[in-house]
Image 1 (tube, helix red, strand yellow):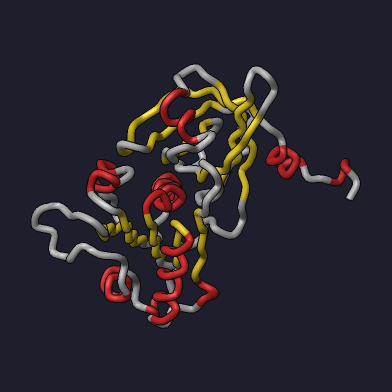
Image 2 (cartoon, rainbow, N blue to C red):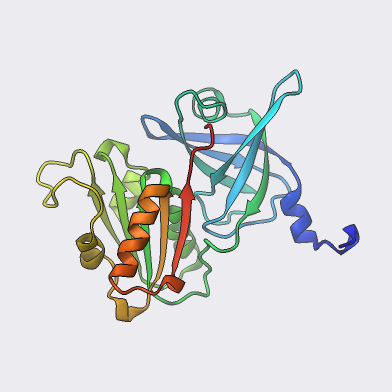
Length: 251
C-alpha cells in the first residue's frame, strides 16, 4: 500500500505524541491513575490501549502497553498503572513521574475488545486484578454516552485494599450492578466465602444465557482462560465472549 493511501486516522494512531502528566491519583498501594494532556490525540473507544515510551538522556528508550481507563475526553488520556517489582517502566510511572513531566504515547490500539455506544444488548464485565482497567473505561463510556444498555460487573480481587476505583464503584450508577469476588480476604460480614471465581458466581451475578449478553473478560492469562471456560460451560456462545489477557511484559 502506498504511504499516501494510509487513512489519516490510522496514521494518527501510528504517531508518537507528547503527553504531559496533569494529574495523578492513588488507586491502591501499588497502583496509580495518571491523567495526561495529549495534543493531537485522535480519540479512542472504551477497551483500547496505548503504548507508552520512555526515553533516557543517553537516547535509550523502552515502551510498554497500558489499557485506557477513561471514556474519550478530547485530548485527555487516563491510564491506571500497577507497579511491577523490578519492572523497567511501571516503577517510574507510579513512583517518579510528576505533574508537568512528559512521556510519549502512541495509539489507540485494538478493535476487538471494545464497547461502542450503539450496542444495546446486556453486557457482562468480568475483571481480575488490574484487568478492571479497560472494563472501567467501558463503564465510564456508557455513562458518558447516556447509554441505557444494562451492565453487570464481576470484579475479582485479592483484598478490599487492592480494589481499583473503589469509591466510584461503591457509588454505583443506574443500570450498573457490581459484585466483588475476594480471593484472599474479604470485608467483615461478607457472605461469599473467600476464594477464586467459580461457575456459581457467574451464574448468580452474571446474565442468564437467554439474554444473549456480550461478555468482556480481562485479567491475567490464567484468570481469563478460567472465566471464559466457565462462561462457555454455562452455555454462553463463544462468539459473544471477548477476552483481553495481561501477560508478563517486564513491567
